Every structure is written in C-alpha cells, then in structure tokens.
Length: 105
Image (tube, rainbow, N blue to C red; front, side, top):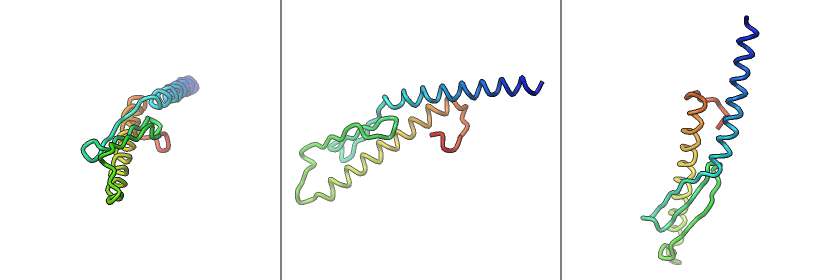
C-alpha cells in the first residue's frame, strides 16, 4: 500500500521538476523593463536576471554630473532585476502551489 503512494508521489515530483525546467526556459525568453529619471534611462532584463539592454537618452549625459547618470542606471538596473525576480517567483509558485522551496528559484 505504501509503495503505490510513494510511486505516485515520485511521479508527481518528476512532473513538477520537468514543468519547472520548461518554465525556467520560457522565463528566460520573457523580459521586463524598468526606467529611471522619467524614462531617460531604460533597462530590460530577462527571466534569468540577465540584462538584455540599457538605453540612455543623450539628454541624461551631463559631463558635469556623471554621478547622477550612475545613480539613474543603478536605479533602473535594480528595478528591472527586482521585477524579473518577482516575475519568476510568481510563475514558479503556480507550479509549486505556493510552496517556497529554498534554492529552487
């Protein structure tokens, strides 16, 4: 009796693992976008928390205030990476039923 339940549970775990691999591949192709400074800096990141692109409007480039541009870039990058992590967590929770499995994502 116990063996049948264990076998069924193992099949469910294997399916969940397979679904998660597929989801991770899909999320790698999805992107999020964040801006800073009213849109003068735009950053796009994918579901693998990789930066895909960085766009800087020429009007944001002030040789007298490089620190401001650096801050805008950091703000946009961090926002994009946070959005990417949130997207992955939300999508993966659909597969895990809301279980938070450490190290999974």
